[in-house]
Image (tube, rainbow, N blue to C red):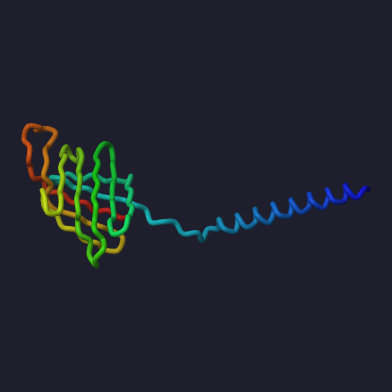
Length: 150
């Protein structure tokens, strides 16, 4: 066998050995002891009607946590100031939740308080808006509660 053939055989074995080692490392990393992130879920209640939301998104930028979700055209967004020991509700937007669309702004319209227990955020109060069934009645206050696990 020529020197070139010996070299090609050794190179092929090295590549095969490297591929096997990478595969083994990948399989080891996929063992059953891998922990998954806790599931995200929210419950919205507006004017006594409750909607479960599984399509929940939670994200933090600096000292603000945004929690947003939608379930069959029921949408909400809540922004919390989490810079202190307890969260403060900054604003909440409700769109078509139980036929109600409205907002709450800290220091503005509506009224709400926020709390946190472990990975669950709760904001509750009264949102300022309107019901789809009565679109000409603007400025209606509707009680709401959002409980979101991020």
